[in-house]
Length: 250
Image (cartoon, rainbow, N blue to C red; front, side, top):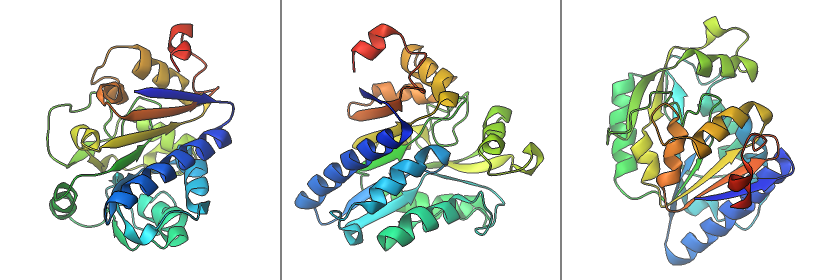
């Protein structure tokens, strides 16, 4: 695992986007297509803004998979991750091959169809974030570190649901769905490369727990430390609780 700490969330987004672009160019120079997993949420806004502004990526040769989605949320809802990806990524890049999780359909059918597509070939790069409770995708603690299923139906804990309200996606916790479809931890780890974008002071406790504590299902994103090709991008706020030894290692 490699750790990069920058001065601002904008700098984090720009650096992570340039890293992602270099990786995609390298992949596409040796293969006809590249397969990616796209993350959503407030922490990814600057990263996606920077990534979609870069002109050197042949997006028509990129295939995208969706990381997670609420169950029961229509695509037009402000909090829908399908809407988020359409507006902030797909429409801006013109990417043609994408697999979105439909939270209004039978989740078992969605998992079966998209999970099958996902497992048909290896994933080149996964873009992820870390939640305030340490979640990875919507794998809240205690996360399932054992299943090999590509997607799971998960119950969202209160900390996760409150984060969605604090970020402005919902006005009250009663509006936040209790269940979601999430890519599993082990499926994320199967990606050849992982780029984690984690800015903001509200992420600092989760960052410390996941990077300096035990690798445990109670801090789901701590599992990223076991992946041989993961880079985590932090700003000074999200890195503010890390010890000197961790920071010196960057």
